[in-house]
Image (cartoon, rainbow, N blue to C red):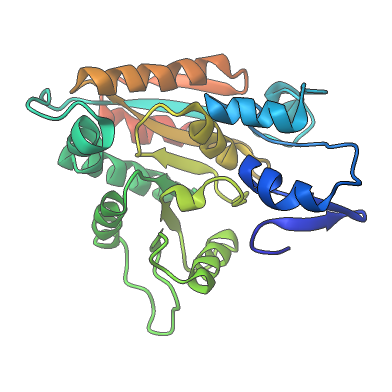
Length: 287
């Protein structure tokens, strides 16, 4: 497999690439190819992405539902928990997500960061392989720093720490080493990442996700949740911890959008907590 995710499957060249890569780099070299088949875990897209995918592959031939994947043993039941953020309302912030209420209300919000740290620790204590998805590097570093203060120091010969944060600042070789350690249950116990842990990265060993990034993008959320919901070995169920942001009207709207997505999926079981202190007890009851 190459770094652009091209590989051969039973003699057929398969490419995991974006539509622009197909139209600009791949198809011009394949004039003799008549049939085009595409496979995706998120067949839906928004805006121009949806039109681009339709232009490349036309109509959907067959769709395998999450419930069928669960019945065939490719997915495990996923238990979603919404934890309330009971902070005072945000005032005087900008109107955009990243430059305003998202930065102040999610990525650099002290109470929310503390809740994400406590959620990850609770899941780790239960023996879960924990992923934490964040929206910015600063958010990831803040959560990583807080978690490292709570876990034992690694032995002198260790290559990685128990809590690692993956971002584009780290060399690709180191990134892969961190992922391999996490997958093999060695040094890395809690893995934090931005979109670098998005599409194209398989982490079947992960069975718990702290979705700290907020937002409402359906594609990225679906990919993240099913990443921990993928069946692997003796995994019986997956846990997703999300946050009910009530401290800004736009953040509340985003939380509701995520809530609707969880409700729509038949493989998900949704619980809405009244208090963050209930999380550990709830998680302990999940198989």
